[in-house]
Image 1: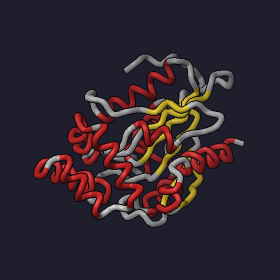
Image 2: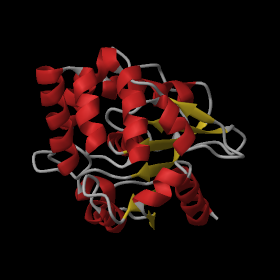
Image 3: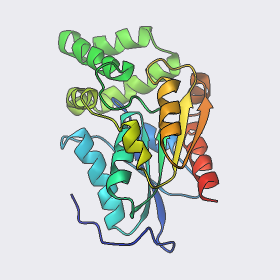
Image 4: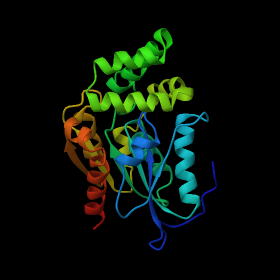
Length: 239
């Protein structure tokens, strides 16, 4: 990882950036649109062959090493990594923007982890094109379009990404209780893969947190609603 200069907090005169981490099977294209903001620049991160988690942590480290005040932002597994980084680098993080938190702690019973493993199995048995066809037949149109695009874009690392994400231990309630920066969460009320109850637990566990809720239709109509709600919540927490 890049060395991060020592500091006693995120200096107010440093430029603020959002480092946007995609969810499993997604990419920087969607993360950048999801966290687009009119006033805060966004660094959208793509998964690489260096490993999903390492790539995300490196991008956050690099932004801090460049002297930025970092808003660690992520969708699903990206939100988990954002919290992890904030816990480890509180003096370089100005807040966490968490969209669609997927689980707490052990992923063994989490719907999102199960979905990743199911997709991995389909890829192994039928290949990418057939897996996309099967997914599209059972998925809302806007989401099927997004996933078909991102799965093809990340095809060289897709299987490795799904495998790593499905095994990732997310922050526990005890971890979240140690979070020293504001946590702004956006969750859906009707997404079984990212249960609202998980977001509610994150919200109640963290010392400084706000939770906004939307629907999948809201998200389909405008992916940037994720970031807007998260940034709005962060601004409220820091005002």
